[in-house]
Length: 300
Length: 300
Image (cartoon, chains in turn yellow, blue):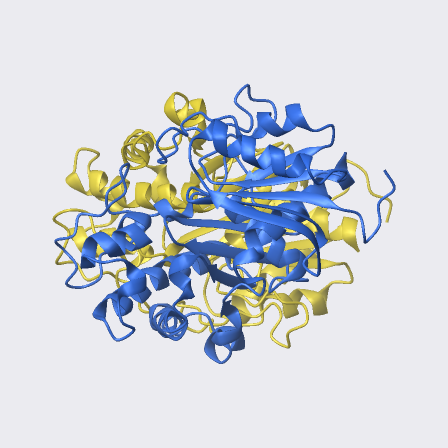
C-alpha cells in the first residue's frame, strides 16, 4: 500500500475500564472512533475486531494495552497479558485476535508508552529527546519515548509500583495494591483515594485535604522520575489528573523536593512548562496507538 | 587520523575522591594509566592535562565526571559542574581545560553514564538494549545506555537523590545529603553508613546489621529502577559494592519487593545474572571514558 499523510491506520487503546478504537491518519483526520466498557476478553476483543472490520482498509494496526503484557516478540506469550489485576484477563491474548483477523502489520505496546508516543508525535512532546507520560486513574502507570523509541528493556515500565516514602501523618492506610500494598499505585491511584476517603475522588471538593496529599504522592513520583531519567518534559494524564488544581500543587511539591539541587531555568522558573497535561487530552492513548500503527507500518 | 582497532583514545574518570586517566584502545590494550587524589580544580585538572600531554597522539578524549554537570552543548556553562557537593568544585570548568589543551574532539558525560557505556562496550552490558549502572560509594549515582546512547534528557540522571521509604526501625537517622537529608544517597552512601554506624563501612564486619539495612535500601533503589526503566541488566559498582556479600542480600530483597508481579525467568530464576557487579571492575568508569572518546571521534 502506498503511504502518505492521508494513509489510514487503526489504533486501539485497551484499558482496564474501557476500550477506545479509532481509524485515523492523525488527530485532525479521524475517520471513525468508538469506545465501550471492558468486559470479558473474548467479548471485548471481538467487539474491537468487528469495529475495525467495518472500517477497512488501513495500513497497519497499533495496540496500546493495559498490563503487564509480554512485549517480547520471541516469547510464546507475545502480546498476552501476564499478571493482570483485572479479573478474567490474566493471560488474555490481546494481540492474537487482531493478528488472526487482519492481514496488516500489528504493533503492540503498553497503553502508557502509546500515550507517550501520541504526545511525542502530535502533542506536548514533539521534538524532545525524552518524553515521559504518567497516567493516574484506576491504576498508575508510566511510559516514555526516548530518542523516538518507546521505552522497553527486559520488560516495560511499571512505574505505578515504585515505592515512595509515606507522607507525614499518613501511617494507617495500608494501600490497595494486591501485589505490594503501599506502592505508589496502592497509595495514590483513584481506587486508593476512594478507599482512603470513603468516596470517589471525583466527588471530593477541591479544598479537601485529599488533594494536597495526592499532590504530595504524585510529586514524589515525578521527583523520582526526574532523578532517574531526567526527561525533557513530564506529561500527567488519566482520570485523576482531570482535577486541574492538582497541577500547581504538584509543581510546588516537586520544587520543594528537588530543593535547588538541579539549577536549570526549566525547573526553577518554568516548571509550568515542564510538568504539563497531555496536549491531546484523553485521546493521547488511542492516538498513540495510531502512531504506533504508523511506526509499525514503516518498519515492516 | 585513520582509525582502527588499535587507535588510541584518552579517557578520564573525574571523581570526587580521585581522578583516573588512561590512554588505551580497549581494556586489553592500555598504553598508560595514572590515578591521583582530587584536590583543587586547577591543580587536579592540570595534572590530568600534563599526563595526557605526555601520551599524545590520541584520536579523541572522553571525560566521565562527577556532577551535577551541565551537559548541554548549547549552554554557556557546558562542561562545568553546577551544584557540586565537593568543596571548591562548584562551577568548575572540567571540559574547558581539555578543549584548550588538545586539538582533538572532547566528549563529556557523567562518571556513571560513562561506566554504563564501558560495561555496554566491553563488559556486562554487551548487546543489551538497556543497561543500567548504579554506583554506591562516596555518593550514589546512576547512569545508563539505552539503544547505544547514554541517558540524557533535560539533564542527566541523578539517581542517588530519589526518595525511598524508611526501612522498618530506621527512624532516627536524619541522613547526610546536604540538599535532601534522607534521599537514597543521604541514607545509604558510604558517608551515610559511616555517620550511622560510627565507623567506615569497610571496617564493619560482614555479619554486622548495617549490611542487611544497606541491602534493603539498595534493593528499594533497584526495585524502583526496574519499575521505572525495566533495564535488561543492572550493574552495581562503587566502593561499597566491594562487599560481595551484599549481592545475594540485595537480590533477595528485590525479589521480596517485586513479590511475583513480574513473571519473567530473569527475575524469578536467574536474578543472579540480572543484578551483577561490573565485569570491568573498578575500571568501568575510565574505560567508559575511553569508549566515550571513541564514540565522540566517530561522530565528529
